[in-house]
Length: 359
Image (cartoon, rainbow, N blue to C red; front, side):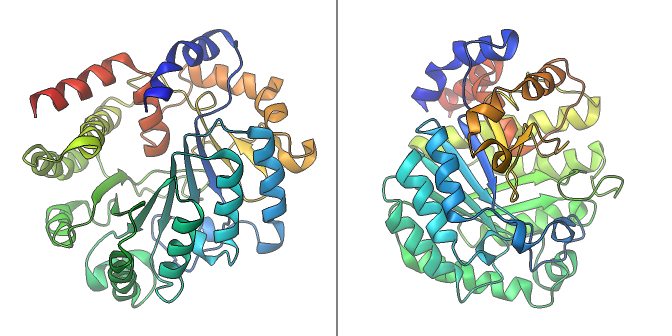
């Protein structure tokens, strides 16, 4: 964390002036579009095919060009554990780039596969913090209905119990809820029941219309009023808790994020500078590089540039999109990018730090 904050002046200059050139600190690596859920808030499973996915050898070449710049890597999908080689993907990225954090979201359906894969990843990436976020959007059959799979909740619960039993020092087990028009009214009940499972963390993000997810025009986002009522309940619960150390700092940033999303939804604008395309990026399953997944506009393809990430990242097309983002031609409350943005926003840092000092 200190290392990231220390690079603030250079990333600020890169965002404003285009130099000195910097590689991202946060990478979302989408390893597949395949998914065994049929969510009401996502149609990513309709895109791409297994044949187009990057191989382990290709990821090795990509991250050799990246080096040790990544601090936070999210291995996403689709459902990432549908990749039979997910352990090998994590292993090769860790061996080359040594990220401090490897975050993997999952729907938890593959209860007979996920725990062993997580154990293998944790042992192979021993010096990284492995964060597994189990996606749960409601309780029981209501969750199954949102996710489009009968028995999803029961299987996810089995996955959670098996992951909890691992007791590996470098694994953090969280629960993640997408707040959408389908569950926003029930959120207090959802939070109360899921938090009773005592996850290491409980996080939420708001359902968004994204090109990546095929949800443009789907009307899945709750209104600003609906979201505020739901998230204020969570904010109240968080404010009454008393975590220690790193968990306390993380909680402070979550609070700032939830308040920021309220403002974005109510005002319809970006409220802090966006560093997507500067400090954060996404690599699609077929090798396309995106500054962000909301627009999902590629600045180049790694297969077409001999797997040279810097060549794509510092291209004229990438600089053009960075300029569009800097000029606030778009805005969103995307969680991954927003947390990176807050680390490079002095006001957000001050508010999070002040919350830590007061609690």
